[in-house]
Image (cartoon, rainbow over all chains, first blue to last red; front, top):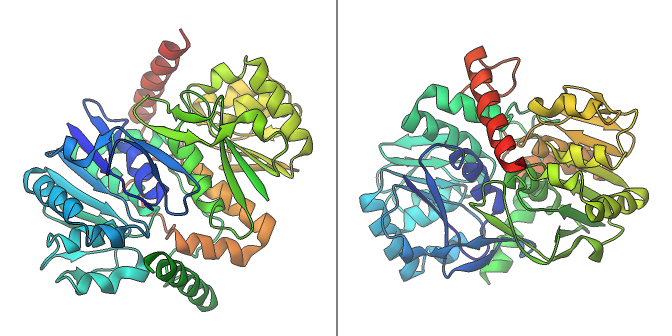
Length: 215
Length: 215
C-alpha cells in the first residue's frame, strides 16, 4: 500500500508527522514523502524541513493521499500543477485525507463539493466558499474522503484510518506503540473550550501571520 | 531563547516534532535542529528524514535541550561524543527534556541518577539500571529535568514547559493554535488501558525491532 504525504513550502510539520508516525508502523505499507521537487521542504515558519523523496508526479496514483495543512496551503489552492496532481491522485485513491488547512487544497480541487468537511477552526468557513459543508468535528468521514481538524488532529484521523484499513486491533496496537494517552495540561484545545481572550489572541496572531505570508 | 532538538540516526519523528510544533510558536525562541552532522537525519524506520541545521557541538549551550527517543537512542548511550555534548549542554541549560527513550541518553550521561524519570513504557525499567527511579507518569518533572513517556507525550510535555517558561495563557494559546483537543478513537494508549493481547503484541513486535537494530 503506497501512502503519499504531499509536502509544499510552508506546510505544518505536525500535520504531516502525526499521520506518518501512525501509518508507517503498519505492515505492508510504504510511505513516500512527496514535494514540489525532491529534497528538503521548508515548514510553515521556515524553522524546520523534512526531506521529500520524490516530486508529487513521481507518485501519480498512491493508495492513500495525506495532505498536511499550513499557511502555504493557500498557494496550493491556485497552483495548477498541485491541483492537477491531486485530482488525478484522488480519482484513483483508496482514501484521500487531509489535516488542518490541507482541506483547502482539497476544496480548491473541487473534491469537497457537497461534502461535509473540516479544517483548522479558523478556516472552517473558507470551505463553504468551495461548496463544502463546514463541520466542526475532529475527524469527518465522507466515503473515501476524510478531513481532520487543526494540526494535532492528524493523529486521531490516522488511527481511525488504520481501523478502516486493518481493523480495531491494529489501531489499538499503534496507539499503544506511540503511547497516545493524551493528558494535555489544559482543556483549551478547541474554540468552544478555551477562554474567550485566548481565542481572540490566537485569531489575531494567526490571521496576521496568514496575511503576512499571503502578501 | 535557544532551543536545541538533538537528532540522531533512527530517532522517532513524532518525538521531535510534537515538542517542536509547540515550542516554535513561542515568541523570542529560536529552534535549532542539531544532528551528528548538518544535513538530513534518517528517522527510526529510515522512511523519513528531518534536516539538521548544524552539528550538536555547533550549539554547545542551548537554553532548552530536547532529546527525542527512537531505537537509535541505544547507540547514543555508548557514543562518547553524544554523551560529552549532552553533559556540557545540560550543565548550562535552563531545562533539559526528553521524550520516550530520549531519557535513556540522559540516563547514560548520568543525569538521571537519583531522579524520578519516565520513558516509553517498554523501557521504563532500563532507567533503573542507571540509577533513576522509573515513574510511569506522562510527564515527570525533577527540577530542570523533564522526561516524558512514549512518542506522543512530547506534546503534553512541551505544553507544560511552555507554562513554566511563559505562563498558563501562553500554553493555552498554543494548545488552541494546534487544536490539541485529542479524541483518540480507542482508549488503548497505555499498557494499563489496552487489552492484554494488544500489550503483548506490541511488546513482541517492538522488542524484536529493537533487537534487530541493536544487532
